Structure formats: C-alpha cells, structure tokens
Amino acid sequence: MDPALESRFHAAISLARDVGNFVAAAFLRGPAHAELKADNTPVTDTDRAAEALLRSAILARFPNDSILGEELPATQGASPWGWVLDPIDGTASFVHGVPLFGTILAITLEGSPVAGVVELPALGERLAAAKGTGALHWMHGAAEPTQARVRPARPLAASTVCVTGPEYFRRAGCPGLWLDLSHSAGLLRGWSDCYAAVLLATGRIDALVEPLVRPWDIFGLWPIIHEAGGVITDFQGRDNPLQGTMIASTGGPHAELLALASLHPLPAA
Image (cartoon, rainbow, N blue to C red; front, side):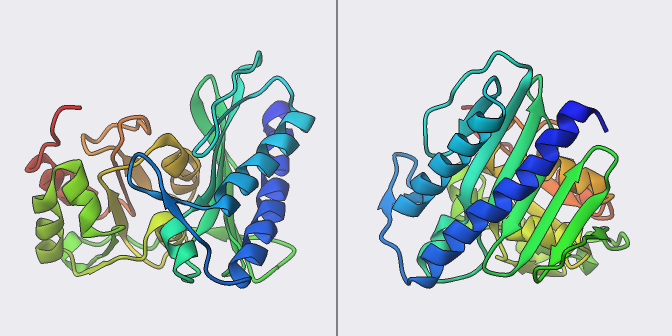
C-alpha cells in the first residue's frame, strides 16, 4: 500500500473507533433531541460534536487534507488527499434508540474514494477496506480482523434486499421502484443505512438499493463493497458515487436491479 494511504487508513480506523465510542456513550444516555435540517433529515448535537472531533483529529495529523462532512462546512486543503465524513449515518435510528447506526469515514485521492471505514459502535462491529486489503471485519472488540466476503450470487427472486424506507423512493421521485422491489425481491427489509452495507459485505444479505444518497453516505462504502467482492454502481450502472443513487450487491441480482431502476427514471435535478 502507498505509505501516504497506509498512514491515513490506519488513522481512519483509529478515529472511527474513538468517535464511535463517543457516539455510543451518547446513545446509552437515552433518547436524543433531534431537529430537522433543510433537507428534512434529522440532526442532533451528537452528530455535530462527533464531526467536530473527527475534523480536529484529522487536521492535527494531516493539516493539508480537505474535509467534506455532513454537518459542518467543507474545508479545502493543499494536498490531493481528502476525507468524507458521516459522524452518525442513521441518525433516525440513533434518535429512536435503534442500534443500527454507524460512523462512516472515507479517504479520497484526487476526489475519488480509495479507502473506507464503517464503525457500528452499538453493535461492536467495524468494517474497513483500502485497495488491496480486502474487506476487514472486526466483531465484538476483536483485536484482529477477519476477511469479509459477499455471499454467493443468486437471482433477485431469491435475494434479500435492503432499503432505507419507501419514503426515500417517494422523495427521489420513484415510488414505483419500491413497489417493484417489493414484488420482485425474495425479501425486502429496512435494515438501513450503513448497517445494510455491512450486512452485504459480510455475506448476510444480497443487495441494497438507495435512490437518494449524498457523498458522505456512500464514499466510505464504495471501497468496502469492492474489496468484499461485491458490485456497487449508481442506477445507470456506473462506478460513480457522485450521482446520488446506489445499487450494491453480490453481483447476482445486479442486472435485474438495474433493469428495474431503468423503468423508473428519476426526475431531472
């Protein structure tokens, strides 16, 4: 691994663990008050505080790197390296006392994601990957990771597919796609947000479909799914995390999912 990437990758794993502990402590204190942002998604004081901690720690180690996060203004750096942060992916779960939330960190080079970490602090799981490392999976505080792989490919009718919820398809302008998924998938479940990506990469589900995502939602997932042997694209089948849509799978149901998505083109932005 390139030494510059290696140092950032190890730092990302450590930072995700530390901030995950901070978020888990807030979660254990009980229900958090949330307010709605302009995009109608919830945010808490813990989201903002966790991102501030991440930014401070990153800039202390890599002062020339750029940072893009969900809750605070972006900062531009002089180096080709960058970070994309989601301090709590699944704030709705966090607020409702559901442990299926996580912290996502992505490392970018010239704007493209090259490494990612997902920390699920309430579940004691971590998933991380950089090019060539494979997907590394830690369970219940294990000191050493195991290699994670997607499960064997199978068709959509036999697949378990995860979505965040039907309201995301409605907001994206493609409610019919959710209905088609409910009719076509073997099982459709709302094990949502980054938790679904961990389930996919560790061989527990077959696919996830997201019609409305931002860079901080998915940049960290892109390297992980690839390194776990999966396929991840936008709704047009492009290997591009900037298009605002995502289909990730074992590869087995991918063509069928793309075909369903093509029947429900999204409104022009």
